Length: 215
Image 1 (cartoon, rainbow, N blue to C red):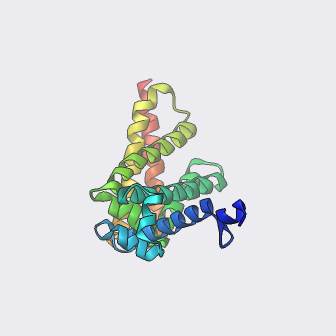
Image 2 (image 1 turned 45 degrees about the horizontal axis):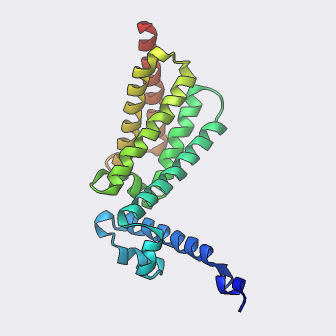
Image 3 (image 1 turned 60 degrees about the vertical axis):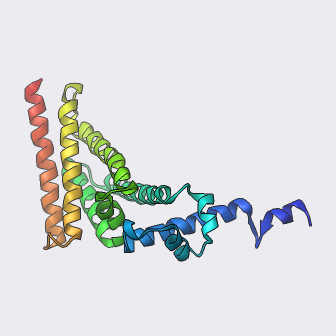
């Protein structure tokens, strides 16, 4: 048997098999966390859904916390990329871009209950998901602040207020989506998008006016 033949099994190299097992574990991790929550997550449960022997779990992840963090980050990055793409495709102007961001984020989460549970619900408990939520919320604040600087041509002196405003909007949107997912905010989704858009735009304009008065 040649060296190449020994390094391949069923047409896949060793590295490809490792990557494929990791992919299956990530998908299974999303299923377990999204269907049953963090308290039900175990290495055995994830491996059972993935169809991967438990001994291979630690080939891909140091522990269950590392898997949970990876599932969270992958879900977050996918959502963020979708929102940024929607903003880029929106018509010029503050309100259309805000509407694109809000509607895309809200609908992406409500259409994907498993990812929504990982990102919004389970991350408000204890454990690695809570740690990732805190870390990645900084990315949301930075994204909102970046668009705010561009939309209002914010000077350096406005940076403290810009950060406060971005933090307020990021936290408010997250809690609003969480309430919606729990069924605490019934009503038409289009109306909710309209309201959130108006509140985002209005808050931004108030903050910009306050910053201008402080110059």
